[in-house]
Length: 292
Image 1 (cartoon, rainbow, N blue to C red):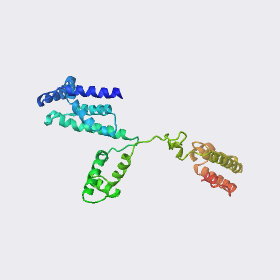
Image 2: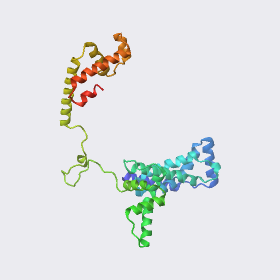
Image 3: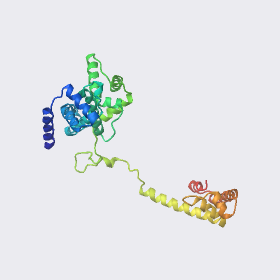
Image 4: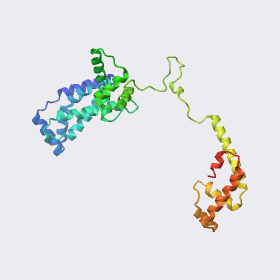
């Protein structure tokens, strides 16, 4: 952490010592980069406004992100601004760069606030960075008028103020209420306290269910073998090719092999299934589904 702090201060000192560009010099550098891809001009332009990027990054420290990372994101936003800046529009580069720097920092903060995606739409971003401020102002105004707002009324007022759906306010309130917690954290301070992950329901198949499933499968197999024994050789062949293969054969291919028409194979198959159904009457639904 000490190294991080040293790096921040060193970078800040360098930024403060960078040249201050007048409008004419700034415009010349912007043209040189846009038209000639002059990297020296780009370096001067970015270096001159790095103090602006650092200043904007510092405003987001309250969200808990490391200052070094915020400065890095601010620098990336500054580079994007320099790459997209059009000097013909008659706008100062600093004015244009502010939007890109802020957008880059905000995206970083929202990506790293929680493992659960906080939001990506413009309304969600507006809520994330303004909800607490708007909420505090609404509560002050209500208190000044001698009113007390319940949580539902407050959410509705925030939604109206920011111009977003009430559902977005409710969602963002949950996101901002606390940070992520590890499922391996203990429920109490005791050394042998249970981990939170132990309270989750195990959705995997239990041992008893595995045994029952194996028993049922074996029983179904025996019933089917008995039913197949009641068929003649050609019927058993058709049933096996139509129902017991990973990729069942078509009626047409079986007809070609047996020297029969497609319709005749279908009739033989239906007759075989009928015989098997009679043999399996009174057994479980699962085995009858085999013949569906």
